[in-house]
Length: 225
Length: 242
Image (cartoon, rainbow over all chains, first blue to last red; front, side, top):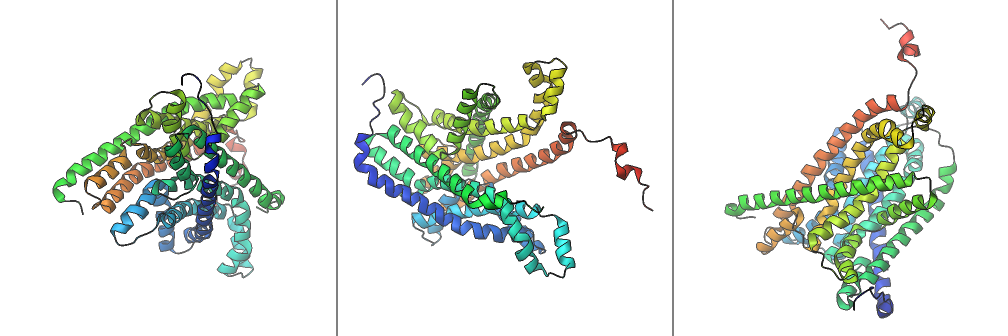
């Protein structure tokens, strides 16, 4: 047919359940990666601000190594290189671990920025009151750090969801994978990728709205620093 | 382990792939920067629909995974427009579209870093929009924009690895081709070599970016935000310690 492309969504109706399951898988893999990487990110940031030189070096090395290598290479290492060395991961596990490895590096940087925003006099003042290092971190520093980093953590959640599309390449049956496999059966790529794009845009908007709700109170309260 | 006789050949192939990765990403950065300048200018336009259009474009592209954008250009556009799009043009256009959205933000924040007072001062001297941009704002804004542009280049290099999945042979594509030719026996070695390739260029660029950022923070800030003359600052008046 010459002329305008025949945009046809009706052909895709039978595939809607598969697309829905794919979308759920996208949310599942992203949520798992975030649940793993956020605590690890805080831990890594504590290492980067700790007194131990070794801990600082490990934290810095990890961040620099992971941030400067594409996520897809990390996924390939987990999915193709590890089995050759006797460790076999299924696609879903490799996808979650790969995304978590990547997200942890960026989360460490976010929390480190939060720690850097706490002025030195607060440490000195708390030290002068006789607060040992751990309670000082737990009671004085970390609560303020969370308020500083909340907006950046929201952005990080978004970039994990967007990054999860790359898990399709190693065969995780999430949304991007399903759109591609339905596309190869129906050749309705135009409609399918439009639907997928709209789903991701919607996801980002919903995450942003939820995040504004979550961080709303703490964002409005005056920051003591 | 890779047979030692082929080792040098593989290294040469991977270095070629690295060159192609750099070229592809640089091309996308150039096109993306042109797009970014247009978007940045649109964001500062007086007419509201123009501002809204640029905003929607930037937000939409930044909310779609790059894989989807790439697949859209490579699989969907040829069907919709009834044309043939080979992997290279598909990869460079998708990367350029992606890059332009991020460069649009870089340009916008670069222009916004120049305080309103300078616009007002230049206007009161009788300069028009174009001459203020050309002689007052852009020379300073460009310096502010260089470090984040390097950041965009680094992330474009990383995103460009996805071009390998539509069959364009850059660094990662080359690595996977070597892996295939070895029937998967050298997977770990090849992937580690590929990772080192990406790390070497991205890390050096990041270091360069950070260094330029520190320098522009030292040089540009005093001009952008004029402070009191040094002689009037209390520190300079107080007598030096013993």
